Image 1 (tube, one colour):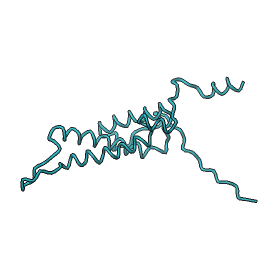
Image 2 (cartoon, rainbow, N blue to C red):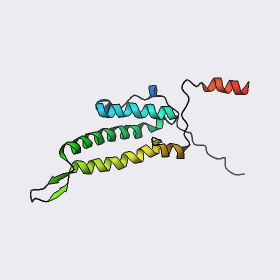
Image 3 (cartoon, rainbow, N blue to C red):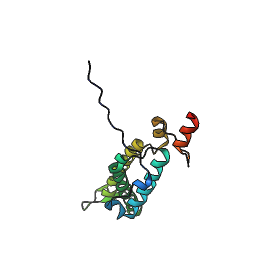
Length: 140
């Protein structure tokens, strides 16, 4: 006889109430705003899980860094002039581009873009849906 297949438990679905932001996010207004919006969006499409807490934290902190880098680039430009007179890309622009790539990857993983939602086959959960009532209606 073969071995019994090992089952791997799936992450527990979560609600926004289960997701209090960690201190590093709560202390940064931009990161906290990103946290709140991201948790609400993931909950709306039904993909919010307790296991995603670290990824949501990283996404929120990167979003805050991206917003600050964008503001600095809009204010000071995307290039700097070195002491030698050579024009170079500003460090803030480099940060902006790197955080943009990271955020785009996380957005695809979370299903936060139209294309990624389509590939994940994610459907928004109707507001006020009661899975038990639906089950009892279908079964009974």
